[in-house]
Structures are given as structure tokens and as C-alpha cells.
Image (cartoon, rainbow, N blue to C red; front, side, top):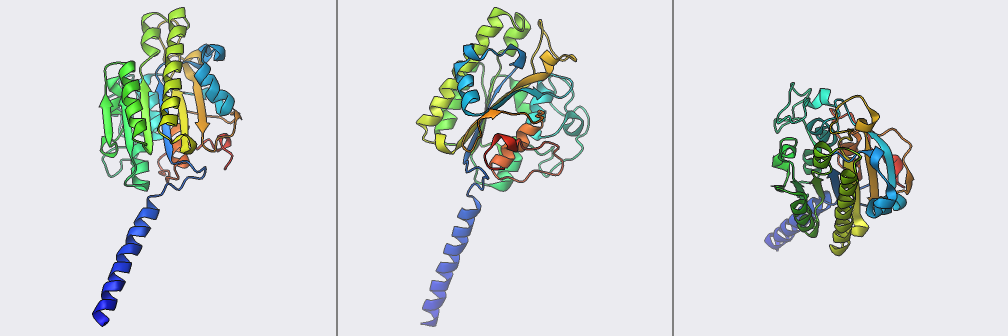
Length: 302
């Protein structure tokens, strides 16, 4: 009888331990979200947005929270500002200081257990070890900007159409967090010019990808539990960027989905607030080394 009771207690202990582990892995979101899909578009300047030409981003705007005044850090170039968004800290902290940095140009102010400045992928994995994370991008420079040890599925592809197809497959797998990066309209800006008819046409192509990804989220059955974020790294003028011009510095920030409060965001938003907002949405603890603040005013729960 005594041995039988011990067996029962042992079984109960295992059950309780498993239950506790399962509960620990439940997303503890203040807005009730279980998934965040972050869509990034390189060179998508806020000063060139015509909402009537961008029906899918307009849908996100009209049914979500938005601003056209999210500011990049200096200089307004790609690796610096994507790293800033990914790490929740300015370039002085994470160390990336040039357009195509493949490693920090100066020592990071803090180095975590994986040998690099902590990023949003690391923070999510620290909070939820079994979180599904993924990343796809058409500029290979993105692959140097985050902790790949914390990304379950990582994919560098050759073109934006491939980004969409790969991102669609990731969404079907119902990820906890996925970063889907499009290289345009930056390429068109550099080759033909920011604000040209060709550049404006490329904005509509990115908008079309956004619409398809929103439909894919619906098809995956996760729309009711998902927050979608759209950002860019910089704008531009003529065929360049990186100068002290607001056309270079301001980009869109749109938040759409679960728990989002519709309306224009009037709070100050800087690139390092992106990672902080994603971490907050998913109930993950922000590292002390970060300087970003979650944009809580974009949500009903604050």
C-alpha cells in the first residue's frame, strides 16, 4: 500500500511539474496576444506615403495605431537602424555604426551570455524557451544583426517575392515571433530616386505584400491573437540617405491587431522602441541595457 501511494505521489509530482512548465510557456501578454509578426521594409520613407495608393497599410492605419514620425538614429542608414530596432538600444550601445556593419564597430556597452548585445529574439527565448521564432530577409546584411542561436528558422533569400513566399510558410507554422524583411523600396531609391514614380510604384508593391501577409495570418487562424507591426529603417532623397534631413529620418510605425487601440500615436517613437514594444506585447522582460520604451499608448491595455 505504501509503495502504491509513493507511486501515486510520484505520478502527481510529474504531472504538477509538467503542468507548471506548460503554464510557464503560456504567453503572458498584457494585451492577450500570442503572436507578433513584424514586417520591415527598407527605405520606406514616411514623407512619401500616400494612403490612397496603399490600401493595405491604410487598412492597418484605419483599424490600428500609427505614426509617420518614428525617428531613426544617426546616421540614418540600414544596418545601424535595423540593429537599433532589433536590440532596443541606440548605436552608441549596440556598437553598429556604419551602413553595412557585419559586427559592432565599437564594443557593445553590454555583452550577454551569447556573446553579443541582447536582442529581441534572445529576450523572447529567455521568456519562453519553446517560443517559435523565424526570420527571412532579402538583404544578407540583416543576418549579421541578431542572435541566430535564438532563431529557430533563419533564411536569407535573393528577392522580395521569395521573402513573401517564405514568410507565408512561416506564418502557417503559427510562430510566436517572426521578422519578415523586404529589401525594397531601398533598391529603387538608390537606383532611380526617392519620390520618383518608380519609387512610388514600389511602395504599392510592398503594400501588396503586406495585404497578402495579413490574409495569410487570417488563413493560419491566428488573426485574433496576433499583433502585426510595420516599420522601415530610413527614408531618403534623390538617390541617397544618411544625412540630417527629416526625409531621411522619419519612417512609418504601424501597429495592428490584438488589443490595439485605433488612432494616431502622438507619443514620441524612436527606432529603439520597436524591440521594447514587441517584448512588452509578449510579456517578456526587457534587459536593463535596452533604452527603448514600449509604445503602450497604441493599446487598450496599458
